[in-house]
Image 1 (cartoon, rainbow, N blue to C red):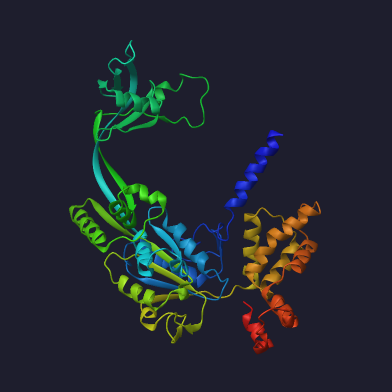
Image 2 (cartoon, rainbow, N blue to C red):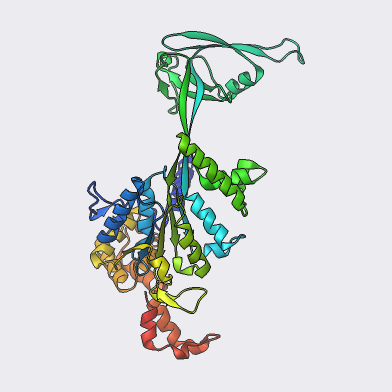
Length: 465
């Protein structure tokens, strides 16, 4: 019974982790920025991936701050996947924030403030500082507890050693409490920050590895430190400009980061922070890491937002802006004018445009193979061929949705491998856009608020992705 519960909990976490782009691990490029056929979850879009790789290299070299890139292409051609691949390739050190175009209209702040906060979330600051630490192996801990309750607080002695020296330190009540919290014992290698008194357990000394017959897998063995007990170490803190803004603009300080309610931040606060960061840069205490801000569905922004982006990109501390859209020539929101992708011409002129092409039948097959593997679905060769044909004739997204549905249908009939009959069954249960539109045309009179009299058959094809 216990084993059953364990497997159930494992399956649940696995399901939670699977997302639309959870199979993307990077851009799938080799060392010379040439795209591999199938790599890191990416398939096809060779030109777009190569272009994104060049941009990525420029970001890493720090040569492209304040630039903007537009990913343009039909729905379901991998624009968001390329942006996710860029985020994974940049690593954890470079800030990457995502935003949807319609998101800024539903926030409890002005549009420009929401964009400014998104910009500053995408700019990292690496702050370097030197701290004095005491690092050594614990030889002995002696704690003298008072015999009578209410008497003087407990005191003690801590003996630390390195390969070169050994010293005894007197302990106060706070240090004794901190040692107890960390469960420090004889044989542990610890580091004590002299300024804050923070104790960090680095591991067990190799010389004490035979003290116990059995130990947990989390036990880490380290060498006994050499040299002096007291050392000066350079510590690097990585934060974003937005985090510094929030800490300095709220009375509760850094706790405001956890509440999520950052509110509007005054321009004076930002100016003071920018001045201070500039001073740190001159003194060599900090360096700016321009990150990436990805705005999906950028055509949803209005003319005010586009004007703000134009100005913000000229700022010396601007991140790399990556925007994506699936629109053709359409109206700029907030005006009566039409423009390519619904973006004003002056902003389009600033953008490096990367286009994505529709996937071929062979590429759809490879993507479906990756998704079947990601979703732990075993599918027969015939079923995969049928699903590829459906994906080619309808849309890739529709075909991907059918994978899990057909797997559930297979499980219902107590099968192990998804067959053609499972795909056919779910294909008849769930309609794609084209069949749904045809159904609406046939039964339009039965629906409320029907305006389909102005839509002809040609428009039904245009509505299909």
